[in-house]
Image (cartoon, rainbow, N blue to C red; front, side):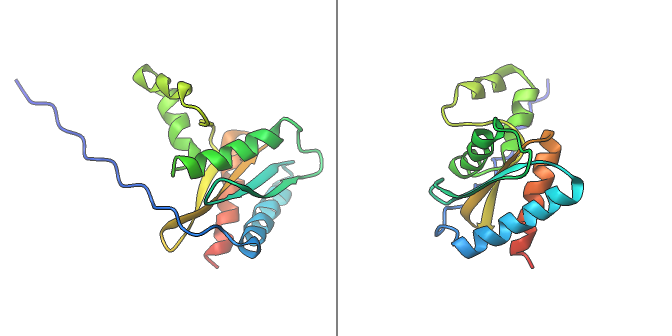
Length: 149
């Protein structure tokens, strides 16, 4: 009889840092908007600080009204749970015991919420909604690239 392998402990999530500045949030927003415009995607983009407080919210031309809250919820979830919301989307998709994640208050398990890091610490989060989850994620990742330039 073989002993089941013990899974490696999960990586320690990043610590919280100081809140994102307005200037940095504007740079992230501009880069995310540019990606959405290039692709012709009418997105809603939210940026929150390290306390999950709203800093910026943009509803692009023809962005769906329902995405206003979803984008903000994705950004907040990424900060509150210190990981991209895609992690939760994937866990729920696998079913079984992971379905209990649906009972977690304040969790939006939809791809498109990403923590914003500086010096390895969470300074905020970006949430994008309006197209498919993968397209929302693509716009969010484009926004993050503004900080690495």
